Length: 116
Image (cartoon, rainbow, N blue to C red; front, side, top):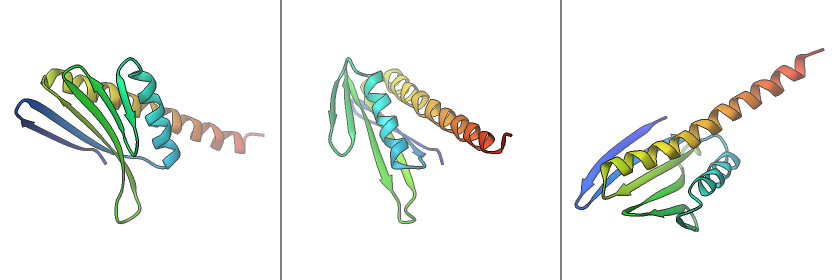
C-alpha cells in the first residue's frame, strides 16, 4: 500500500508517502533507525517523530485505520522540491531496508525449522 501525495503551498513543497507496516515493533524500529540517520538535526519525539532540517522538516507518524491495519505516513515539507524529494527518498530507503531485513529474517527462521 503505497500512497503518494504532492502539494505546494507557498513557500513550501510537501511530499507525503503512506506505507503499510506489519507491527508496532517494526514502526518503532523504523523510527529508531530514522532518528539515527538524521541524528545531526534537531528532533522532537512525542506521538510522532519530527526532524527539523534547514529550510524544512520531516514528519513520521503511525496510523491505524478502521480495519485495525497499521500504516506509517512520511511527510517531507521544504522550501526546495529537490530537498523534499531527497528527504523522502532517504527515509523510504530506511523503510525498504527494514522490509527486506524483516523478510530475510522470516525466511531464515522458516527454513531453519524444517532443516534436519
